[in-house]
Image (cartoon, rainbow, N blue to C red; front, side):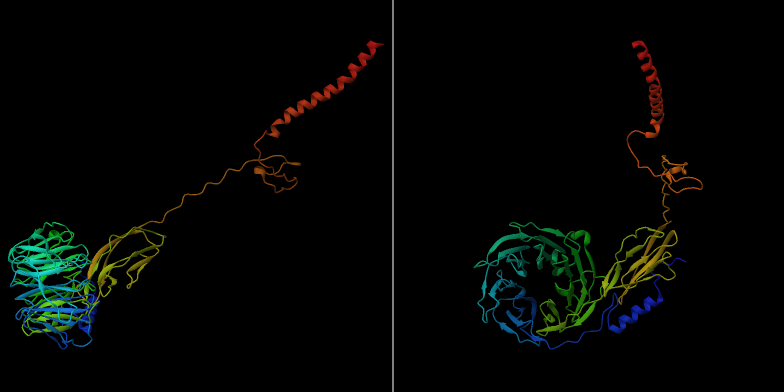
Length: 511
């Protein structure tokens, strides 16, 4: 009896649920138990944005209420102690670091001039440069050194040469209304800007001399942005509706999708080494973590933080922890960077045909974390002669019976839902080979005694002399010349008899 695609075995369902419970993991659409929190880092008043220097491991936190910036060693094995630089600016918002020069750029919303200082100096000197009104977000292209500042009061993005002795604006790009969050794809150099009151996202080529932005809608008060530099997927928080949206750089409008995130999402970060996405829920004191490669099938891990989480720094290749700035208690939480599991998805295409008596092999593939295993749907079978390796997904063997067989293949791991799909194998009858024609024998002659058997055989028969084999030749046929030879011989004999008679007559005449 044919079962539906969702009819994988009860054992599969039970194993998935029990396995997830044993590991303390979350099934799709659920949240895990809160992770334990270690001692936080103490910083300045009302921390907001965060950034890190990948060359030194220093983490920078802007504190908007007192205008200071805190710095600590993100690679420390124990809770680090932060240095805090006072009087950097007013109403500080975003921050970014150039890992080549060590320069730190801070958006000072209370002025039209971002603050700049050397993040490696014990007591840095603060400088500034003029941009548009009410700068909010800031990002750095680590390859070119260009700095991008979102001016929320001017609907523009200012582009600075961040590696000049005195960084100044080299281009200005018009975007949507009230741009705030901003991010750069470090591989493609595309720049993305969230236009809060325009409910849109603008993007442009950050390496161009005079960039022109393209804008797409479909967002609700977009706030923070982050980019996965290897998958080129862009993530955007929607503050008012507690959702996160994402789209792919290759086709933003066509790939736009979203899902709910609890707690008024404000901060956002993508771990470039694991593809995990971290979203801070400002109102519920938690961070939601999921796999950005398949957000809807990923587990949603809930990481407990301090009060009012905002900015996030996450990079498992750099730091042992995920760092989250908590604006209501002036701390930075240190959270474990675990890997969320992802429900499986079968990715195999159609199966090739098979033939009775001919060895056959096909390997099913499926995405998911941990790696899925494979099984047939309840009551389904493979063509006779084939078997399934549950670990590798390979079906192999030699088919014995022709026919068309349809079966349900199921990929499973410890995260639901499982992935099931119907596949068909057409098995053709065995191929009957064409008979090989028998060569026609060539008769030979030339026996020295009685005739031998036909066909040139040299085996003797009773009362006969064996015929000697003859070599093939391409000249005259000697057998065909025997009549001529016989006639010639007779003429010679006749001539021989006539010669004495002529001699006798000649003698008589001479007498």
